[in-house]
Length: 587
Image (cartoon, rainbow, N blue to C red):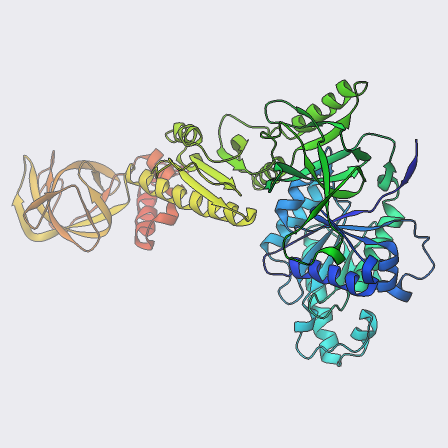
């Protein structure tokens, strides 16, 4: 079987506004300028930079230590989670290496940390591009190469850059990742390289490419071996309408050779989809692309790793993120089995309780589930596509059992037009995973607080009252007295005690000549009290407390954050009284 090395596939991830797209543009721009006409090949969803162009950009940096046999580097043009999670294959991502773009001035932000989690989960090696070095105050570009530039900065600028880099090193260390500035890395298999760069000035681009080429050549050689005589394997990056062709598939082919008229099997939600390649399309060479609209030309075959547009019949049910393989009649059963196994690998494990999640692709669903699992948030149902009325009905069905789980989380998806507001179901959608998870956690926290506050109202709350002198309206049957609410909240039906012994129950509360259900601290009211006589069991000036059952006391202690400082003091006084006879009361 013929074997040679293919281009490593490189994805770009990072926090919003840290410069992912600008960095990709800069890498492509540098390649185009330096490599002249043959400097870059535009593929569908990817840019291929040949090794000769990489060598020209890196110059003396590459040295002669490594014998370079890679044909070049393939960069996925769509940066971010969506592309990375879509481009999955069995056992991980089709990306061989990732670049995590971090603003050197801001450091690791929530989406940076989320990207690291996804990279770790997919076992993808990565390099950190510490971007925006040009925005470090008084940094100046003095040389073509970065290390020389860093060494000629004013000492306080050097110190500032070092501090910023070591803040990143420290944060990564907390996550169990060993890292170092690229020129100080001792072992690339054990340390993540940090390359300071500027997507604006181009500083650090040669060094970044050098690190990527070195990593790929030295440590990924086995996984980059290309089986040219074998069937093609790929992942659907996007499904789109193309003028004159109808629905087409943008595919990244990561292994093998794909030809026009090849039979292919594509993963499907219900079952695998069998079809035939009608046409393979690639963009016209850059030098011929005079207008802004991309023009395509047909080719008879493509070799991995590359991006290609496929025109084929019966692809209406195909969704992004699905695996694709070519087959012959001899290999059909084996390929079908592999595709089913790959889909089955990410059929989400769901439980009897939890939230409902929807995403645009299989890979996104996998990433979302992984990050929810990291936060111990259970998932009851997971699916791909729009949020439907059935999803809302399913979420609502669990409301009574667990209101905080009657949630639908949607990543990169819309909701069906007929879905209107539903007070029992919370729908959270967005295109940044960490933000929708943050919103979910915040909402769940609020709901828990509301439920706990309601639970407190079902318990006998701590309350302390004093019978006012000169305000005895009736001595007995029932006794009616004026009281001052010294602390807490008093409700009708509350049992009252004096010196630890239960003596009466509040039958009615009257405030400003109206009967009310409850009254709080600082107010005065007339209470109707049964089974007591003023002058015997109670007297003017007496202090009475709510008689809190032991079980209620234990529950109230758990909800103490909803009590005022005064109520907590009353709780302590009640416990002190009760523990005179029973030292372990309420413990």
